[in-house]
Length: 88
Image: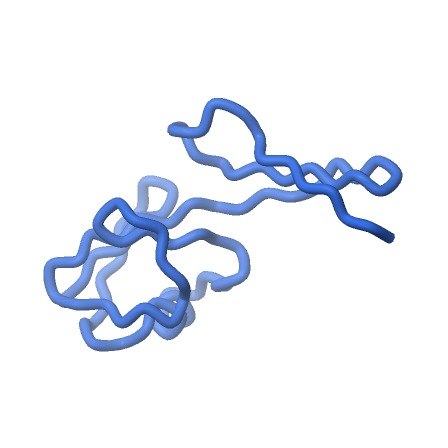
């Protein structure tokens, strides 16, 4: 089994499935989180293995001002929001 931590909650899923499928099994939208496995950022097509330490970080976006959109990752390890600029 693989343990997934999200917002101080723990979930268990079977190994040898993609992170995307694991998130769907625990009713978390893969588009709403960043996935870290063993401390490294991975894509949702990563195959989970026995012993992997999986932590999810919620993605928060909003604050659109003109062409600017602020995007912040709600992680205690981040010191400031991540900002991106989108052309409209």
